[in-house]
Image 1 (tube, rainbow, N blue to C red):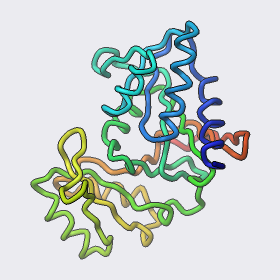
Image 2 (cartoon, rainbow, N blue to C red):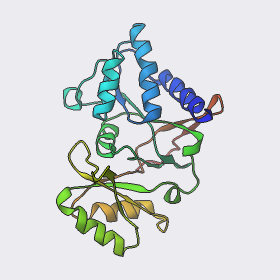
Image 3 (cartoon, rainbow, N blue to C red):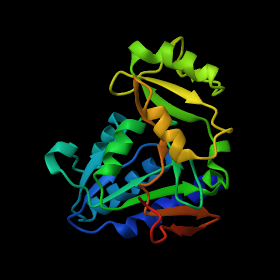
Image 4 (cartoon, rainbow, N blue to C red):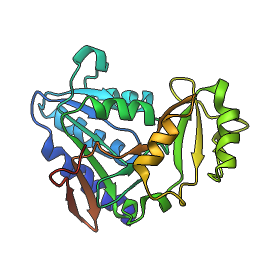
Length: 231
């Protein structure tokens, strides 16, 4: 119940950053879903916005709450993107991809003027590399080879499953979840993973976030980007 209260508080505060006429990136996950439901109420009251969903589930949810949605290719630019995270640190670096939408989430984030993350307090950590297994998206042809390579490098890779079958992303790719506890230089890790043929994207969001709104009890705590933080 405490987490639910914090998610609601963070999602409610995020609405303050949405103005009439905005194109809004709509994230995925449980906290983003709360924000979308609340945003739908504002739309019903007359707020005019266009939503850019980061997953099929988000698109369905937004439309069910009366939010007009478009594809990114139809707008080209997003005023503000509001999404959740699996973990974040004081530098506003994130691990995302627990729901498997990391590729679309990163594309939406990259097209946004401002990226706002909403989360409950359990997602805050001092050590991002130890907080959550890192998802990477891989093309099916290469997934076995990539898993073998990462096993030798002591990442303890786990192929994500959906029942007995491989989990498939919206692009028909696989997810491999990695233990990155022995890696402190996350920028270097991200470069190394991207250099592996067949790795489509990683769940490291290192230089995208401008603001984190964290639910704290029934209130919120704001983490803002510091000057020079983003490359």
